[in-house]
Length: 242
Figure 1 (spheres, rainbow, N blue to C red):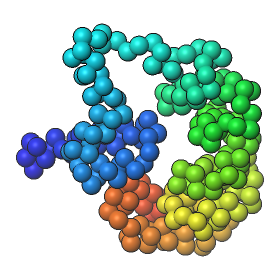
Figure 2 (cartoon, rainbow, N blue to C red):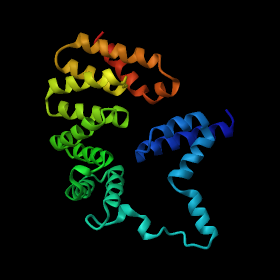
Figure 3 (cartoon, helix red, strand yellow):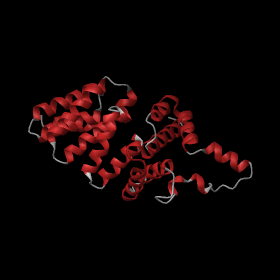
Figure 4 (cartoon, helix red, strand yellow):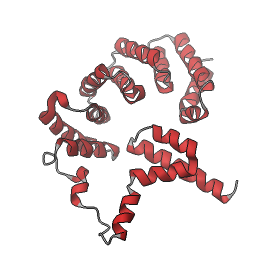
């Protein structure tokens, strides 16, 4: 592989990792895989507004962004609902979960039932990160009740995990089974298998691991690559529970 090939792989990997870290739409990863080098360049140009910044510099504008554009720096309580939503999401992506909770709870106080699903989902992730499982469950229940396929089923998975963390195994099992009837989700399949194992049903757990591997074998290459971690975990489980 030549220098350009290595550069292509590095840029694609960096774009994919950045996409996951920033919680951008997963369709970007598909775009990057299809268009490779140019897809990764377009991803960075779009998400970091590189073209806009170059235009501003060319016009003699200072490089430093205007304060008004940095909505994630607006103090909690001082911004519009849209600014609070962006600020909270930015804090979640940085791992500042307690600060994100404070921002999103301001948004809940202002907007009540009109809070967007994205904000409820990000608030639930922050609650989970600090161990507030019941609060996370309540937000995720609202998200899933309105859109069971939200974030390609990720909210459904997070809701099932909340019940699992609260030792509500029967409800967690019910939610995993509902999700897997809608979407073949490798992470959900693996966690469902682990739940069955913890409930004392190793035979059913092993069957879920075999199903996971079979579904990945029949999936597109990018899907197998993105979920190879769960393939390894499933193989390890089957090896240990021969």
